[in-house]
Image (cartoon, rainbow, N blue to C red):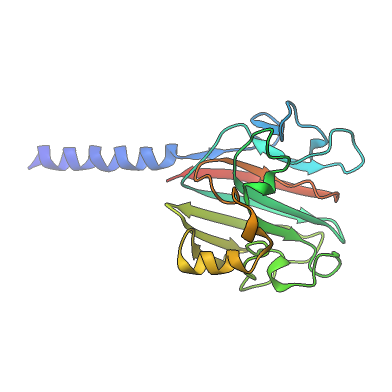
Length: 220
């Protein structure tokens, strides 16, 4: 009996250690280690400010900031804050290749936006928290200048977004629902959009001051 209890405890400990090992900081809060500009080396116009990755839209080396590694099934969590009138995004499933001039040609985007003051606020599926140009978020984001908490879960094509603890998007990549959204979006003729199950994760440079912090990933 004691042997069975001991084995159960060891098994439970091993499972928990395995789960803990799957959660990784993608940003150490001090450096840009583990990140690079799309199709380049180094962080470009991104720098660390007050413990956050921040884009300086006036600096040289503009471009989206990518994880060095690629990911397929995961839970990504982070916080973002956008300047008034600002636009950005969290783009994932990116295939980094010179034949694709931008991350969004292959990657799927969770929108980051100042819903009140940004120019791109005319369509509901362009607002913060949306599955960009495909589905509007079920709940609004906090205003410019405030931190918004995000979680993106992607598992075997099942895609779920949370914004400030509330589920805002849920769909299945490749499903009838997905295909209908694609057919009504700007991506309907983009053959390589969302075509790569495994890819890089990017923080978008859209010309506005934007900050990201507490960036973590749990591989599933």
